[in-house]
Image 1 (cartoon, rainbow, N blue to C red):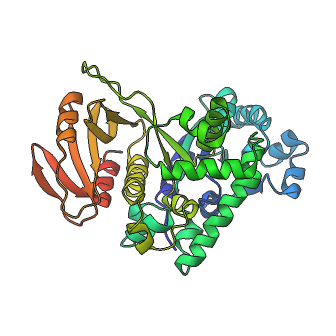
Image 2 (image 1 turned 90 degrees about the horizontal axis):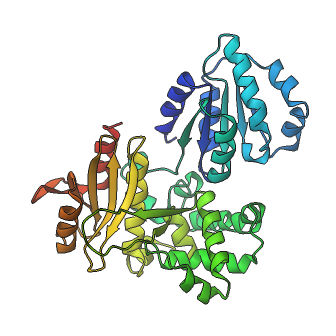
Image 3 (image 1 turned 120 degrees about the vertical axis):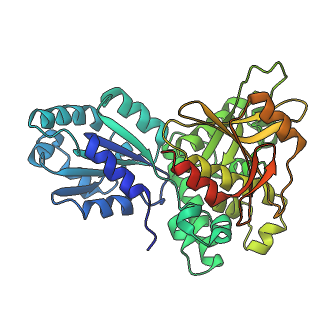
Amino acid sequence: MITRRDTELVQRDLAAFPSVVLLGPRQVGKTTLARAIANTVAHCIYLDLEDPSDRARLGNTRDYLDLHRHRLVILDEVQQMPDLFRILRGQIDARRRDGRTSGHFLLLGSASGALLRQSAESLAGRTAYRELAGFDALEAGSDLSRLWLRGGFPESFTATDDDLSLRWRANLIRTYLERDLPQSGLRAPVETLRRFWTMLCHRQGSVFNAAELARSLGVSVPSVNRYADTLVDLMLLRRLQPYHANVGKRLIKSPRVLVRDSGVVHALLNIRSLDDLLGHPVAGASWEGIVVENLIGAAPAGTDAFFYRTRSGAGIDLLLLLPGHELWAVEVKRSSAPRVPRGFRVATTDVAATRKFIVYPGTETYPLGDGMLAIPLPALMQRLIARR
């Protein structure tokens, strides 16, 4: 059993807010986490809104929730009932009048954009947001190579062998292509969507070029942008925005895109083992992707993430703007004896970075000169968590 750090964070949010929205892709462990919380609460009810019998209980939603107004109500896959948010606002206000100021509703959802829009309109000032990703480098412990190969989805990471893990991820991808993407409004052929997703994996971490992708797929640029928007909304793709510093230099101004789970990258590219991965051209970009995702996930609330590139080649893989305007610059290397690239030195001077790190797959933290540290991924995550 791997204990999720987010369990304590969600419990803390429930103690402070009337409702908590827990976001995350399908099969990432939201329901498991919610049920673990439910086991610690004396009065709790759980409803899965993809289950017809549970949805039927909400046929007369107000009366049903009134009946359970003294309980914590957990609503899973809440994006299935978008009209529910307006009712929840009234329920929260009624419970507040009864003297209950927190811990009314825990809402779980798999589509971040739609849920954020719906809840922001109806539950403004009444909810906290928490994102649940897959297992990270701290939760995986010494199994960092396995985490890198298989990704952080719990069923994939804990599979008894690599083949079973790959089959699980292949089924997950198929579910998204055949059900979740069409349900999100995409009417493109399944094979086109698979090719698009696979092309993004081949270009992991690259600057997004919709025109190039559109030509390769034989579709329009607006279609490509719509495909990308949907993958972002389902929390499968990250757009990393450029950092626009006033440095008087020509900057790359398009976002970089990263498929958020390394195991999904490897499944779409048919990478079956760690040996296959280490010999594959995507290895460096894949390692950078898992580092970026883990660091963003460990950063304190209110942190903004960017990258920085100039047309002359100076760059920073990840810039974290922490609360208090501290700017942490991160370069990602796969080498066990990393060197500081000249472009990174130039770029950190351009942006006046507060802290400068080279993340590498070793176990020791040591100085590299000019205020730069070589540091393992888990150690840098611990530093970020300490800032929460």
